Image 1: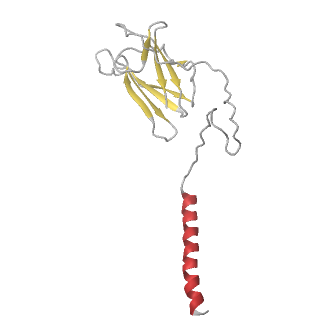
Image 2: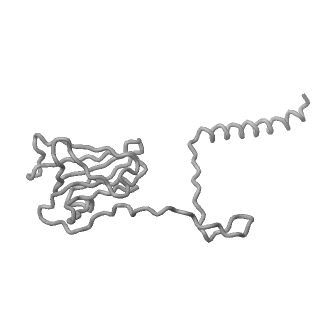
Image 3: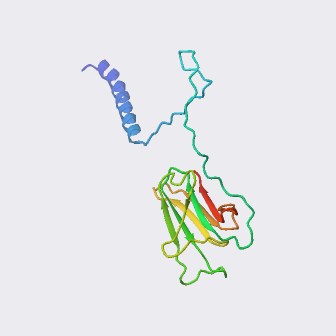
Length: 177
């Protein structure tokens, strides 16, 4: 090869190898593309015609956080709504009235599939006895899919959640993304 051809080929070869290297590296990266829905008043590109409004099916409103004032001795059941896309474990530690866990106090836990109980929530129970949540009990929830998401800790009657619903005598914990 002549010296002239070598000088022109060398930078072109380096450029091609660089592009191939970048493409290889980009392929290794976890990239996701999120598409956002268009609003009804936007027009489609190149058409000038407004897009039709998105159709939706009516649904029951999701369970709202209860906000009734907490009365003295507010003891009741626990209703949990998983409104997230994560599988979640809810854990309860119920200390004795003195604030110290009793020797027989065992933590209890319940597992929820993604969006399980989303609309109305699910009332939790224990195998041996009825679950009665009371002020001072501690709740925490965490995702089981490796996303490292968690909710809580919640101290019943002291933190904003769970909320007390006097009508029905239940505590409500709504887990949102």
